[in-house]
Amino acid sequence: MGDSKGMIDTGLEARRAYLNTLISDVKALDILFEENMIASDKMHIGAEQEFSLVESNFRPSPKAPELLKYLKNKYFTSELARFNLEINLDPKPFTGSGIKDLHHDLINHVNYLREKSADLGIRPVFTGILPSIRNSDLTHDFMTPEQRYYSLDHIMRKKRGEDFRIFIKGVDELNMAHDNILVEACNTSFQVHLQIEPDSFRDKYNWAQAISGPVLAACTNSPLLLENELWMETRIAVFQQSCDVRQVSNALRKKQARVAFGFDWLYGGMSDLIKENIAKYNLLLTREVKADAMKELAAGKAPQLEALCLHNGTVYKWNRACYGSDGIQPHIRIENRYLPSGPSLVDEISNLAFWIGLMNGMPEEAREIWNRFEFMDAKGNFFKAARNGLDTRMIWFGKGYDSVPLILETLLPISRKGLENAGIDKKDIDFYLGVVEKRVSTRKTGSSWMVRTYRNMKKNLTEKEATMALTKAMHEWQVTGKPVHEWRAPEDVLEEVVGNYERVDELMTVNLITLHEDDLADLAFNIMEWQKIRHIPVEDHDGKLIGLLTKRGLKKKKIEKLDLSSTPVSEVMIRNPHVIHPESAIEKAMFVMRTENFTCLPVVKDKKLVGILTDYDILRVIDKIDPEYDDDKGS
Image 1 (cartoon, rainbow, N blue to C red):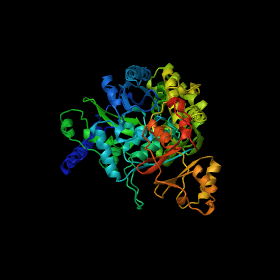
Image 2 (image 1 turned 30 degrees about the horizontal axis):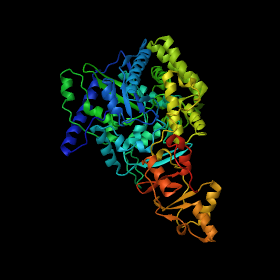
Image 3 (image 1 turned 90 degrees about the vertical axis):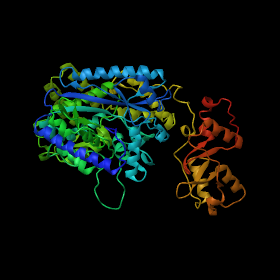
Image 4 (image 1 turned 180 degrees about the vertical axis):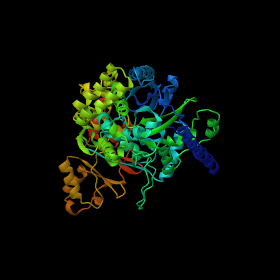
């Protein structure tokens, strides 16, 4: 989550000291620009590769800390969750074979990663959001055990003052509250860095904003979250909402989200952008900074600007301006943070080539872009692309275009020219831009492949099984090295995925029909007839389970001549039914159902109904759990 290696502000003096250092860093940055001390030649490109780790059943593996120790490699680093890691690639010159060299480095790192992770019985998967993640994977137990993450979680929850709310509406709808920041850990990205000449920063940054929508449309790879089909690039909504520390109130005050696209074109320089971030975003973290940037400048050194970089690292712009220094000469760069991880390594590098080519090929009409392009059109394009991918209609310099022809006929030629101007080898330009061209022209993005495959799998599998099978299929295609437009639907699902059940939440039904105690019993009976179900949980108005209705019980009441049309549910329901926790073992649930002759168990967490487990759920997969299970029970 950026440069978050800070500590919670534990006192007023520490906070004041950090703020003084931050102000000093800003003054130093101004001097660096005024004195032309920022690097303006020999431009470089770079990338950060985030990825997820899965077990043999393709569910998230919490073994990232153990793997990191086992790797013993400086290029790998931890992430927020115990099931994610990151690879930091060495920068390459933006010329000649630079893109291909970056690609080869990535392949070598990933091959090493696959070899070492196999020793621990796990494997890496490259995707914007791992399909097989579940809500139970997003507890504090899965947070990487490092103080910086605990600090960040603590201060963000404190500033929020209540649970984080996630509401995303796509084909499905996700509406949930969460008590920590680990929902953000569902996201993994492929962040691209491009060094920028100081004199062109303003126009290049604005251009980066303008092209974000169509670039994202071509690269989507995260359509699923918690078994829900949402946006084509669901990461965008997840990151913004999972890190939103703004408190809800009745006031109409426009307080800016910490994860943001932006609010207007940049009319000044990079310093103005940094100052705006400091003005609009409160400190999240502080740390002691011993270096004095102004003194370092006076001594002829290139300062690190640690305080400035720390604060900048906790403002999550999709296009982020960054400062860096090797101790000899500082540089500035733009980080593209909206590209997802995956679907394949060649797709990622092709996305990189497409973007940096566009950046370097910026047309003359993009200078002082505010005269020709409405900022809100650029912002609207971005969020429409996140929702709809290549089906988005874009507003481009005031005119409407469908995404596919805009990319193929306008943006790819600009990117090609930009790569040619940088001196990138022609065969590499043809290869990487060819991957993007084929993906866009066939409309086969990572997201479209996942959606098609997931829908087909759900015809024969449960949603949870389908997410594991989808993750497995994705991993197998990634190992081949082929770009996503060449991927086909999997032909089979191996036993290692389907049938590996250990916990109740892996089998329970979550798409529930419930009633309240003042509803009519006759309504309950008819719903059971219409929907072909045998059980209906009864909730109070706070979502707490207070009873259970069974079809067998209602039939018995009818035989006894009870008038269900005038009888409330409260008089016929089973009060205080036996329940089970979602993280309980399947074997425990089976034992209870067998010994008590139950046909279902309501699943309850924190007194709230979260699912229901029936004998049918178990019988469907019983041969994979317990071949000796006795299914001779009533219904």
